[in-house]
Image (cartoon, rainbow, N blue to C red; front, side):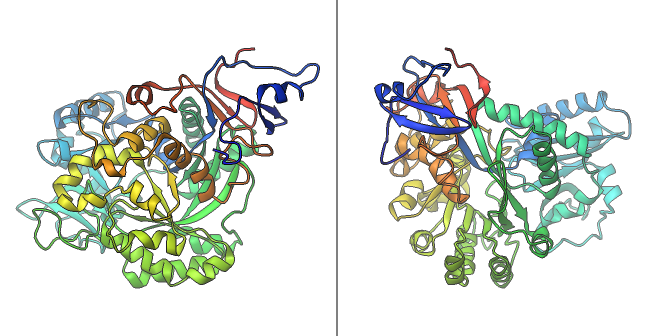
Amino acid sequence: MDPANPQVEAFVVDDGRILAAGTASAIDGLLGPGDRTVDLRGQMVVPGLIDAHVHFSWFSFNLMEINLDGVATLEEALALVRDRASRTPGGGWVRGHGFNANVWERWPTAKDLDMVAPLHRVVLSSKDGHSLWANSLVMAEAGVTPGTEVPVGGEFTRDDHGNPTGIFKENATDLIWPVVPRYSQREYLEALRLGIRHAHQMGVTGVHDMDATDCFRALQTLQGQGDLSLRVYKQVPEPAMRAAAEAGLATGFGNEWLRVGCVKVFADGSLGSQTAHMLEPFEGRPGYLGVPTHTPEELAEVVATAVGHNMAVAIHAIGDAANRTVLDAIETAVELSRRKGLRHRIEHAQLLTDLDVPRFAQLGVIASVQPSHAQSDRYVADKHWGSRSRLAYPFRTLLRSGARLAFGSDVPVEPLDPLAGIHAAVWRKRPNEPDSESWYPAERLSVQEAIYGFTMGAAYASGEEHLKGSITAGKLADFVVLTQDISGGGEESLRSVRAAATVVGGNLVHGHLEG
């Protein structure tokens, strides 16, 4: 990933940094007595893979809770809830994540949960994280009744008699979350250690985290204990922006392990929950334009406040209307942002228009996108967006326009697996559907471009391209040994490649290095 030295035979690591990179003969001349030599026998090495969009504590806790991702039917999901409830003391909480009602025969209800866990409080989040499924005990505890008003920027479903059915979307989830017990610091540390181990197994050396302030506190504790082996660029949730600014925090503050990132803001919902904010109605839903979670004026004010306190913004935008509104808001502060060196981002940027694509480069807005969404969402996007999907997940179009791309997973919405993300960017098809056609193949990227998104692209998005993202002398010694050479871009090699070894700061954190 170093344009001045795009491929090398060998490199030297010393004291956590890359000392030199070049030919094997030149490197041999730098070695002295006692230095260790590792011969990878032709295996491919890439810079440490950085996931530019994760919900890390959410993902980590999901490793300990009910995982509904990929569960094909409502009956299977209810069986998992019944099993967990049978192993949980009565009155306790049963939690989980990942349900996708779009592939079920119908949307689930509180009554479904009441049947399998009548003595437990049950709350489950959807695969996209924009919907909650709660049982009757939880709704009662939250005080949700037929007379409860729908919050602005949210919605919840009702039956024919006006009773809430147990599904809460977008800002309506705020009716439920306050009664769900917060995790303890001990639970956070246990979960994050588990998540970090899993990340290293996937070749991940760094992440840009979107979760709440409790996660930030736990990460600081891990660093203080010397247990943080994952580099984290920590976004600040919008509700905490003013407190962070008053405390003097700004984007970029921190060190090579834990750094303050952008202010994370939501502009709309999601494709899966049909709450993305659209310029034209969803297919088959006349007049329905989704759910904007901020007005244009509110977004502009958030951007102005953040920039005034030397903080960049990372704004979630799925629908084409949401993306346009976010670009408009950033444009109002673009000159001051440039003077301050702030790098704003749009998270997801899933659906754009021809008019808005060039504005990313013009405004210096980073497209923080998740290639795995393109393969997972292709059928749902065609269903709800129709021919507009021509500019859905438009990676090649954005790159050609001059925009900078940073790649991530949005875990736990998609698996924490950048190698799978590279496959998605290159082939735009699901790995389990090898005979299918690539979805809008004109948007496919090369292997080099896909790797760049998870290395230099992500490093640029956090303002750390001088520290990481390439095998370059002087940079941090973060790198991954792959089980095979993927440079040819073959579909089979991209499907089967794994991380044989992961090294962070010169320390082996996963796998083996012989020699």
